[in-house]
Image (cartoon, rainbow, N blue to C red; front, top):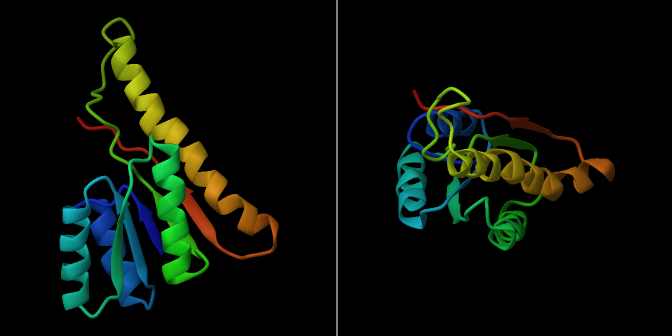
Length: 139
């Protein structure tokens, strides 16, 4: 299982749940140190996990991470895309700045498109699997 936007909340919970059910876990977020901590915690639970640092707004970093993940784990059977939406808070249209809207768009929309581009070709070639795209807004 691949978790894009791995963090201490939902991402870590999914890693534990899927890991306890026999999935090997690949974690992606920006900070390798945090990923290593998550992988170590999962390892103590008997779950095989490894972190791959990449900023999803950086296409080349994302491509590199996917290459490393595929080299390490092979085919991606389940992927969960749940990146941090940045410093975006829910505001009215009149209060939303161009900068915050672009940050959200780059993190969530462009990140999702670039991520999907890495897994869809395998699906078109008959590889079975699922991926989930979601975005959570901080309150």
